[in-house]
Length: 384
Ligand SMILES: *Cc1c(COP(=O)(O)O)cnc(C)c1O
Image (cartoon, rainbow, N blue to C red; front, top):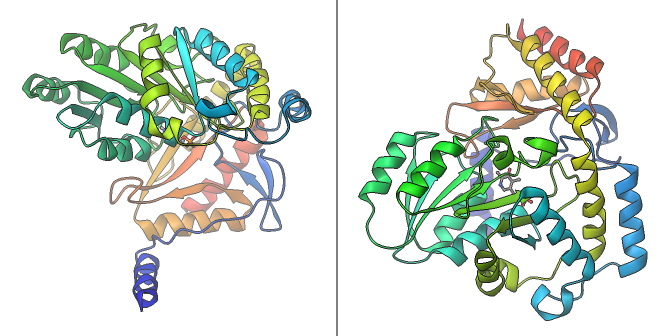
């Protein structure tokens, strides 16, 4: 029976400390959750600004449901494109400083759609080795030639670009690396793309809402503006809701509307979500105080964890990975934290390279200083 083989594979994962399991949350997203019936303090959401259960966004979602009902009923190109979607696309394009924007149901689908629409067989993709899984999957699906450069290694990328043959060129990068928390050298990447006439796809899942002036994202952070940059960001992290968008030149967006399969062949997201997201964009824009609070918590955590036996990666963003090393060690630590009512995600291979299993601590503007102090204290207690 194929079942025995599946079971054997699961047993193997268990033996390697790689079995994944879920915990069930029964309260709204916030640092203080009830998880599997027990109160716990969470440091694993990507709700960086604490907007996921903001009352104004919830009210906009409710009002949107009254106005538009629950479902879109069809794909955008059939009859599922609503006024709230259209309005949100305009708001997002203008917020990130691009001529046009296009909504996708998730960031995963956005990456799959963009890469496959822009390049194909005979074309060339260059990607940072630590890019998000969705970009990696997108490259494989596109059938283009794929070259992966060492993390942030502009010299290696430069060599690869010079040696590449005919066909279009697309450089893909996370802006903020999701398991490291460091920021890509976007200025250097843009310069290389200019030099070699390549497209640059920037995945700003963890920068949008947090980095740049008024939270406009990584391009604003580096004051970059180029028609060859295709900007993608997600709306389920700092924006606190769900979905993603791609922003770029009109010709790029029209190409996506016509050729991105993960856009064309899927039902549009509920229009009420776009109502919630319009409110979310307003709160991001006026969210300097939240961003400042987050920045202060990041500084506090880094300072508080500096003397642990485990190194923190060099990150100034809300993603603060504590490198533990072995799979089983990170699981044990994560369980010990759980027993003390603290939830931090244990990240293991293949999400991160072998031997670099880590606790991925994420902070939110909705954490209090006392909560961050508690995490610091408990990690010190577990380190001895
Ligand atoms: C979360 C994430 C995605 C996927 O976005 P979803 O909306 O969750 O599908 C893509 N890229 C990066 C870098 C991410 O962190």
